[in-house]
Length: 44
Image (tube, rainbow, N blue to C red; front, top):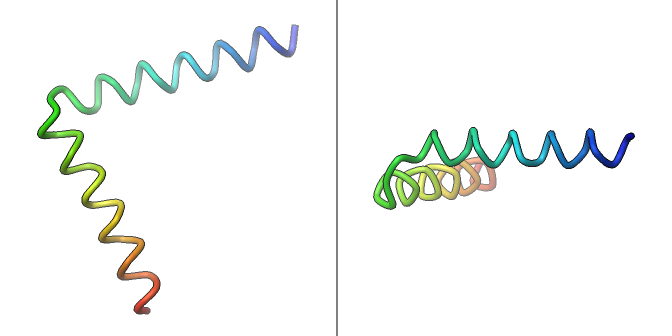
């Protein structure tokens, strides 16, 4: 039961992530913004 719940949550997360980045260009921008935020946090 718990395993099915975890799998369902993972699949839901993947689907939400896929719809959030409609294009490869959009995915690249998302990855870049995450990297920039991490870099800014380190520089603090």
